[in-house]
Amino acid sequence: MKEFPGTTGLIFNEPLLWEKGKKGRLGFSTPRRDVASSDLAQEFIGDGPDFPDLSEVDVIRHYTRLSQWNFAVDSGMYPLGSCTMKYNPKTNERQASRPGFAAAHPMLPPNLSQGILKLMYDLEHFLVEITGLDAASLQPAAGAHGELTGMLLFYAYHQSKGAPRSKIIVPDTAHGTNPASAALCGYKPVAIKSNAAGILAPEDVAALMDEETSGIMVTNPNTLGLFEENIKKITDIVHAKGGLVYGDGANMNAIMGIADMGEIGIDVLHLNLHKTFSTPHGGGGPGSGPVCVLKHLEPFLPVPRVTQKNGQYLLKEDFPDTIGRLHAFNGNVGVLIRAYSYILSMGGQFLKKASQLAVLNANYIKEQLKETFHLAYDRPCMHECVFSDQLQQAHKVTTLDLVKRLMDYGFHPPTIYFPLVVPGAIMIEPTETESKEDIDLFIDSLKAIAKEAEENPDLLHEAPKNCHRRRLDETTAARKPCLTG
Ligand SMILES: *Cc1c(COP(=O)(O)O)cnc(C)c1O
Image 1 (tube, protein in one colour):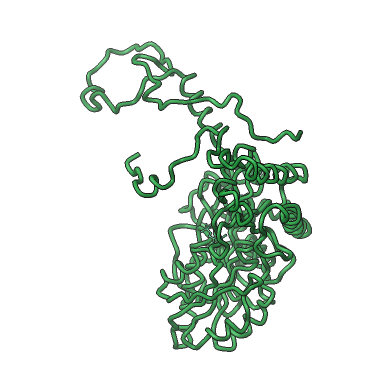
Image 2 (cartoon, rainbow, N blue to C red):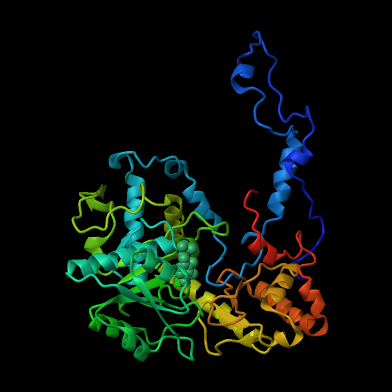
């Protein structure tokens, strides 16, 4: 019998601190007072806020127990498709917390910030080399912010040609942020369907592309985990009508050192440093979504830009065609430091290896599970593979039931019900950092769950059973959200 990582032992309950406190209990002792007491505190603060009285051990246990209810990449496999939840080496954290970086103030003048400016300058060049484009800006603070930057660049480019355009083509498999970013910039997103093979067909792009269309947003590999094989033809079609191609590079983890985005006709590409380049992002941030561009879009890049002159690094604002500033200061600099450290410690050779292993792991899972679960597109995948609950529906078991049960086995659920083109989607991205042993345990868990679905579907309807919290009432939560805490 395999030992799955899920277990119920020694998970503690923990009440709110207010329920735990006891009047008069103290977490610290101060030296004996050697001056007369005064009423000032009472006068200014009154009785103070309603904080509970707690001992040191009460507080330590409270937060330690809460931290143990959490699931993290540091505690187990987190195969959340489209998110690249890979293990982030601790050395990158250590570099980001070096006092020289961590304590630097963004308002220090450049001559006192040479270290961090050099790091930013070099990082831009690394990203340019990895993507095959010509110039970069580290300003955008997330992938979606990079998309918005890209759309502003599109707009500025067409404006400079004297003809701002109004529409943008976005595939039906795209991340929801793509049409949202386009719309935020004033463009009308026009949806394009992927074909029976799960990718874009050049003739469909040709049918939609016209001179009112600013360009296309393409995620490659796409959110079905498939490489857009017709990308070169598609970029040629868009360029022939004077349009531009935006590359959503959130899935760069599959193609580092393998695909040259400039060569295949991408004009602007964003990267998610927090996905591909070693920043933990389970809690939602902070992130970084640099954009890389080809030469003809460089004049429009946001300011300030890091430049170098006579060995001195400067922040330069003076670019007449710039789209302007995206926010205060220089983005989430800690994320930039982790990416820099990660890229240097891996080197070109091992970045490429990381992508190869990420793709190998996803294909291994796809092959091992394709008899057990319906595979949406049965062809070689990139860094993630997409199944559905089609075979389990006969037992009235849904994707939600399957992945809730997976938590009992000790794994974070994959992404579910996305992309929308696959009903009941289960989107698995193992990443390169999981060992074969852990991937095999994950596969065995899903096989065991599929068997349970046939033999005892009620068990799955009630899952999770072993976790700290049981199945939540999602309908009521959506209809009557508790917004006051
Ligand atoms: C994650 C992701 C985004 C958005 O990135 P954020 O950093 O979350 O804003 C965009 N597109 C794809 C394909 C993604 O996976």
